[in-house]
Each structure stands twice: as C-alpha cells, then as structure tokens.
Amino acid sequence: MPLPKNRIVPKDKMYFRPEFEHCLHCGAKLKRSHTAWKKNISTLHGVIQVWSMAYACSNVSCEFPNTFYKSAEADLLAMKHTSYGFDVLALVGQLRFKQHMTIAEITEELSDRGVATSERNSQRLYERYLTLLRSSVTDHVKEELKQVVNSHGGIMISMDGVQPEKGNETLYVVREVFSGTILVAKSVKSSGAEELKELIQPVIDLGFPVIGIVTDGQQSIRMAMESLLPDVPYQYCQYHYLKDIAKPIVDLDRKLKTGIKKSLRGIREIERKLDKSTSEESEVVKDYLAAVRSVLLEDGNPPLDLPGIRIYETAEVIQASLQTCLDKKGALATPERFQNIQQTE
Image (cartoon, rainbow, N blue to C red):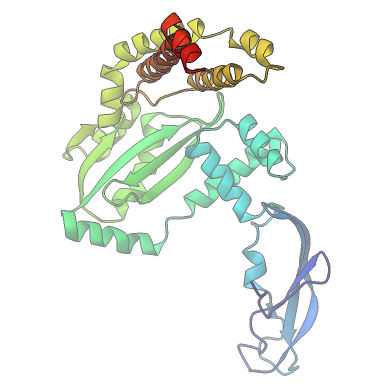
C-alpha cells in the first residue's frame, strides 16, 4: 500500500506535514515553522516514532500570520496525551465488552501482541476507550434516529451497567433498541436513581418520541425511568428474564458438568504411559484422549446453551465410538477369525 504524499518515512521515523500547501486565508505558499509534536506511538503493528510538523503562511502581509497548520492524519494516529494508537484502544474495548476480559487478562493479551503495558496502564487505556465511546454520539446519530422514528413511530431505549473490575466505576450504556445505536456511555461512581437520571435526560432532550423501555430490572434504573418517562411502556429484558427463571436449571447443570469432568480426570497418567509408544493401538488411544481433553475444555452459554448437557452428549458420543472400536477389535480376535486366517494361509 503506497504511503500518502504528505508522509515521509526516513528509517523508523514518520514525518507529517499539512494536507494542503497554501494558506487558507491569502493563498500564499506555506513554509515549515517548527515541530508541533513528536512522540513514540505503540500500535498493534509495532512502535513508530511520529513527528508532526507545523507550517505557517510565507506571506508577511497575511491577515492571520500566527495561524499554524498541522497534519490531520498525524492527529488521527493517537489521542492527545497518550502514546498508544487508536487501534490499541479499539482492541481494549473489544476485549472488555465483547470477550469480557478483566484488566489483568487484557494486559496479558496486549503483551502477547507485543504492546508493552502494565495493569495500571491498561486501566488507563480502558478509561480512554470509554472517553471515545462517550464522544461517539454525534449529529449523524440524529439522522439514524429520524429513520427509526419514520419506521417505528419512535425510539425504544435500553439501559445496562457493566462493572469492569470490582471496586471500579460502573459503565452505563443507553442504546436505541431498533438500530443498536449507542446514545450515552458514561462511567459513574454511584448507581443511584438520581445519578442515572442525568444519563437518561440527554436522550429525552434529543426530542424523539420514546415508545418503549427495555432494561435488566435493576431497581435504580427502573426508578429513574419511571420518574422521567412515567407513561412509556416498560419491558423487562427477555434475556435477563430467561436467565433468572432458568437459574435452578443452570445450577443443576453446573453440578452435572462438575461431576462429569471429575469422572474424566486422570487422563494425564494414561498419556504418560503412551508417550513412547508408536503402535497403531496407542495412536488410536491418543486420539480418544485428545477428544476427552477437549470435553474438559467445553463450555456453553447458559441458559440457552447449557455446558453440562453439551459435555454429557459429547461424552456419550466418545463412549459409543470407543465401544464400537473395542467391539471391532474383539471380533478380529475371535477363534473363528483366527481359524479363517490359518485356513487362508
């Protein structure tokens, strides 16, 4: 991929200059003035040293002689006052909210990808990601909501809270249900109704009719919604509802999973005995051991995908296959089979 014309890359350094060459006020040619900023930026593809050069108008009679021009592309590489690229921040957000990793796990994942960091620094990166999330609500969101109103007669909002680590602030996110658009995202120290009302009010101030509310049933959220939108129909989130009513089944399934996994332990000792064996039978046994080990790592997504049931069904398949294999081996070793072989010879 060719580099943009405004970028010069001498060795491991990257120099940026403004995307245009002439003054926007008088049209005179710009000339280099000074270095606006320089820093090392850690990205998912390695560390780069970036220099952003400031340019000024060469016309001494220009009406705006103290106007300095910088590269917009350089400013898109990283947030101010940080040395990590936006790709790293986006990854941190994905690891936290999509894969539900803890700060310690995020730190380990970044380190494995070659991004030097610490747990404290990873926490800061996570906070910067939240800052980006909060600032993502722009004018184009209003256009999306207008389309939702045209299609459904109004917007439906949901609200949920996520606490990344015990003792940390809780991130509350308000979404529009039909489009999935994030309307508000903010970390708060208290989850009281009054604090949550401050997050909901800006959504109401957008001026779009709210035709429904969906939440997880948290009391403070319900109180805040009822206070601000008393006449709007309220619905308990179906996923949370199903999760709550299925809790007894999930608890029993967890016991089933624990019992099955306990009965399958001890395969390491069998693997040690087969380490030096190269017979055909040992290779078959190794394949079955690998299948059993994969069962030990099996996990589902309750309440719709119960891990205990999944492990039980998989273990039954392995057991049936193993029994079939043993039956075939026994049939080959019968006296009739041995006599037939002798007669053939």
